[in-house]
Image (cartoon, rainbow, N blue to C red):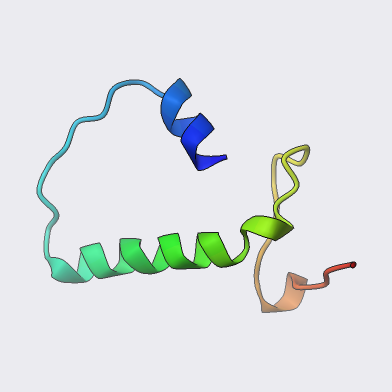
Length: 58
């Protein structure tokens, strides 16, 4: 899904980050996205992922 988004998006402009904490936060978001990747339904536009909404069906 990420590869498709990147391939269909406009060209990127790379800039420096404000500080290393911003980079760490982005890295953490990537880790969390990878963990929940199997729960993503590509047919749904909005999906909540949080403690109150973590009800998964097998």
